[in-house]
Image 1 (spheres, helix red, strand yellow):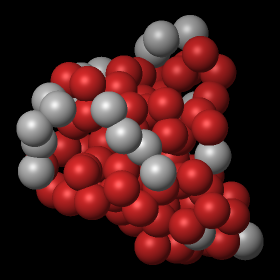
Image 2: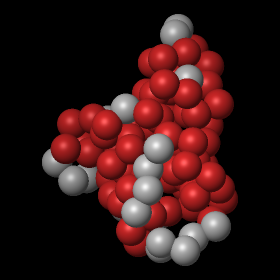
Image 3: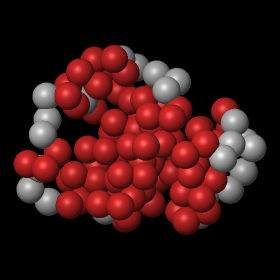
Length: 101
């Protein structure tokens, strides 16, 4: 999934993600990272609502994962697209992880 994101191929990244059963990922940190990767792919694909849902799942599973620099950059980008957004809790998530515009 990560390689596809780096290459800018969000669709392939999501296809790879679909092959994974999240509950079978052994550690909470890796499971949280899985969801932040999905969020990054959806953000790249301009599917903001899906990206936010994935970030909120990641936050619930492993809050430290959404505080990582790369994930904070995704949150910042989503806020830049719609700085007044109240969509699915984006602004609340941004406040909780210390992202401001």
